[in-house]
Image (cartoon, rainbow, N blue to C red; front, top):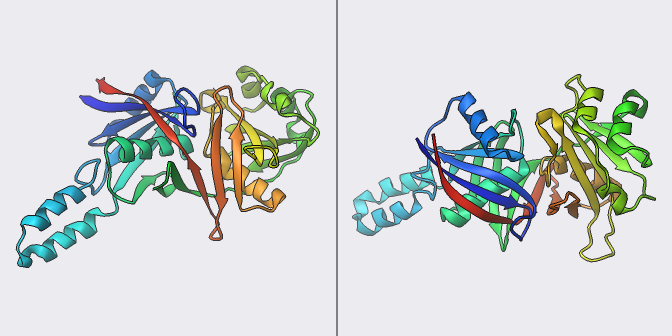
Length: 314
């Protein structure tokens, strides 16, 4: 079996920055153990698998329809339009795997998947629809960015005393302003005090074993550490963050879209802003545009760079 595979750096306009994802285009569903083996082989924070739904191919059947319309007589036009109705959604299945497990939602690998379909496969549809464990996720192009339609996950206040040992492992002696928890995503969010500097965030070095030792209940699958940004200084980031998830095989996710479904809900309320610019302060770094919509959904925008393409032979 030969599977087209790509490496895409998401949430960046530069290669070797942002968050790399492996993207596989598959004709039919694979065995679950094979998905996991491929993800372990790629050894990136996420490997995504795209399967066709009602599209003729990964670049859609619209080009075929243009030929049909050109050479069809008038009596055949209604048939062509029915094909157009069937194909125009450009629907695809999408699953995400870390090196150790399947996950229900991933932002950067969704952005990377859309980049492969739009930029390399030349998909002509204005919107791509991905069928996922988190429902339908739509992605569209806007100038040099891709915009994803994602859920918004508002976190709830969390009693710090209940998890004081985990907090100590995560941030050490850096002062904490607030702690929240998102039950939907199982992510813990730690907001550092406003007196903290960005360097205090970037210098954090929690150990995977210590994090796992202090949280083994399954309640928490990832820890977000965030702080208020500097919106008056260029480029004007509203908040900063980092994300640690050894519970799913990732010590630090360089730029995490799903974490920003929690962060956007929190900071939108605190800053009284619908549109925000965020920066994740990993060593690779990445920028995300966020817009909290009136319908309770979230637009996440970012750029992507395709840095590698090849064939996986199994």
